[in-house]
Amino acid sequence: MKFVDEAEVRVEAGDGGNGAIGFRREKYIPLGGPDGGDGGDGGSVYLIAAENVNTLVDFRYHAVHRAQRGQNGMARNCTGRKGDDCFVAVPLGTQVSDADTGEIIGDLTVVGETLLVAKGGFHGLGNTRFKSSINRAPQKASKGTPGEHRRLNLELTLIADVGLLGMPNAGKSSLIRAVSSATPKVADYPFTTLHPNLGVVRVDDLRSFVIADIPGIIEGASEGAGLGLQFLKHLSRTGLLLHLIDVAPYESMESPIEAARKIILEVEKWSPELAIKPRWLVLNKIDRLPGDESELCCQAIVQELAWNGPVFQIAAINGEGTKELMFAIMSFLEQQRLRKSEQD
Image (cartoon, rainbow, N blue to C red; front, side, top):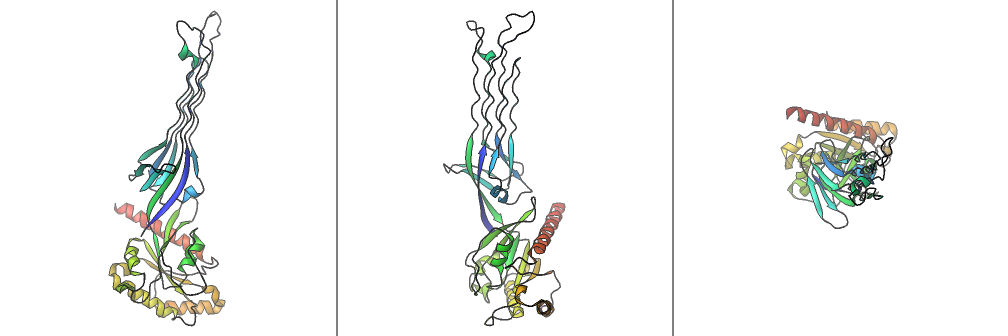
């Protein structure tokens, strides 16, 4: 399932180092002459396409990236050191544009591909460079030029790793709110999401995945009823499906088991391949039932569905059980990627 992930980032290349003014003063060399060295070039900022980065979430926390300034020149014609370049890892498929002008700077589509987005300043010249036949002792040196400063828009078309499957009001939007910074509409009355929502889930500083909440599936979705049809076809591109079930529905709504069976039937009707895709059962809203009653209800659902896959019990509204679920998903996705790389 494709979504657009966007971020704005500021990049600042390093200024060039200033040239030095100096004169040789050594014993037995009374007229040593100028010996001020050039400064070093400023470092540039590059974006680099990285295979192990799959979202732009890092730029929400690190919005400014700077390269190093060039070192100033020194006496004895010593040139200043060049500033270190700054390499910023971005996901494959990132499109880069200038935030102020709208100019498209480039696309990064190949692992290891680099894109220069801010060029470092040119070094200043030392006074040695200004020596001439008519000016044997120049008191002049030039300053380094400033490095480029730019605001960039990064745009990435994402394919979600995890898709949420369930009836309207199963708690999909609440779950995506609980585990990511996405803010889909949620409420205490039954309604269905009208547009897909995307959340980037960070399990730690280095690992993250993309989770998608699609409009709730209703009976007849495989034939075109409701909004589910236009999104069911995209679920085949996810690595894992989470089948959310409301264990404590409103009195006017059907039982959890009936709702779950309808979802399974619609998926099977739409695509046999989708029906055999890895799918986990997530029993939501356990906070609405007392402890013993909640456990018995969950057991009954699992038994009635003859479910033999992974089962998780959560309360998305307060985050109960969601951390364990997200870590389990991350582990599963990493195993999938490892198997794929071994096959390739």
